[in-house]
Length: 595
Image (cartoon, rainbow, N blue to C red; front, side, top):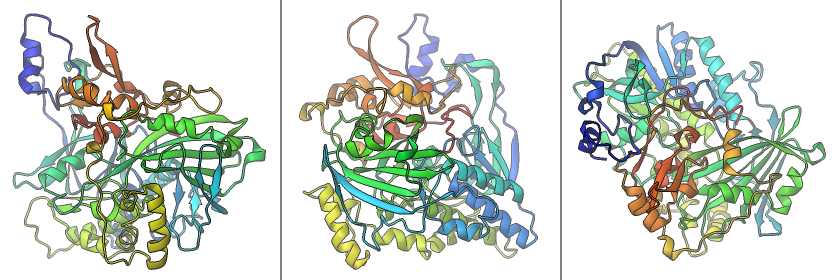
């Protein structure tokens, strides 16, 4: 939305039509008379290292930094800012954890009480048709073999990592959302600013308006998770994606269920592909039996965001999947206790950007180190944070080091990561995800995995390409068949709003919607007109809704920002690339308990 429209909105003597986007990142406050005289000074604080994001990568980096500082008797101030109200509250993953990085980071994790309670005892894999399940053997050496892994509730593990970090002297600041990257005059990163609070939904300051604070650092570590909104800015400013392919993504939807004890098999890991998705839509399911002293299962569906039919709803596909006989037999008589959704990186080796720039580094799922065939990225994310920490510590404690820029550049981190097992692992599976884009679709990918990966272990002398950005893959609605989804039965399948209620999502209602539109006219003029408003189908939280105009003549987009579970799917899949997800007031969003 052009800034002059925002300005004219408030200077006009006639009442203009209500606008959707009022956030200051789109509507500049210096052109808004209501902000005249408001103090905009920010308090600034200094640290040695500031880490954005209290997830597995960020906390692993923080822990490793303080371990090294303590070993070498160095004073090192490490601060972690996290947008969730509590450490772990925004974490969502399957999750079947490969413990390699955890063992390296905290060798005595068992004695310290890490919540790894469920070793994998059984692996099952199958292809689903509408009524049947075709079992597929998992041969030794295939990515889906989970021998030695643990089924975990990742949010609980992250909370435990936070406790380990605090014991070492790391400063944790949950409830503070990093909204802005700060730069030195020479262009290097200076640190971050947390977001302003106390702004009304219409974009005007409240009486309780409070400016965010600045955190300056020698090095700022960006571990925001998948599709971080600050990382997006850094990609452009430092041209970090010049020599890699576009990132490609999926959306993962997950529920926790308490089931009948006779259906419970603690330690069992089940994965399927096929129904309800067609062979040209990448995706698959998981069903993990946790051993948490009660019959608990974690289940979910992952759908690649390079799908083509704009009518597809990942949420409704997930609800439909639970009615398959092989799934329903496990859930029958059970009760759903939690729901959530999150985007995940699937680009792998081909899509990893440049990881370092003056004043900062990228770690974890922000640049994207997920091993897609394994459906695992926590171990690689943690290792990237540990490697970054080691290189940062060496650089900032080297008395002979002289930085060319005010913000310290740590290029050895990227070199270190490329010499690590993370890079070897990503390289070995680099062709499995893009092999899906053949005439045979899903089955072509499975054949490729079975022949080339199992035999050659990723040593084939070619690297396949992805097909491009997910936002460019939708076909016009006129070229696609609408999908008829069954109504939820309230026993196995549920409606969207009751699901969001189980996520604990909450935002201060009277604040500008953090789902911002660059141009308020695009949703109706393009997305609705050409693609039947795909945001109303792909959002897993009911944020986007097309409703009739009050005049009865046409439709308008309504954004229910208070429902947002921070999955980032809209920012990724919007065919107009008109949606820009920014952070809401700190502490807002889902309140997951061990998702």
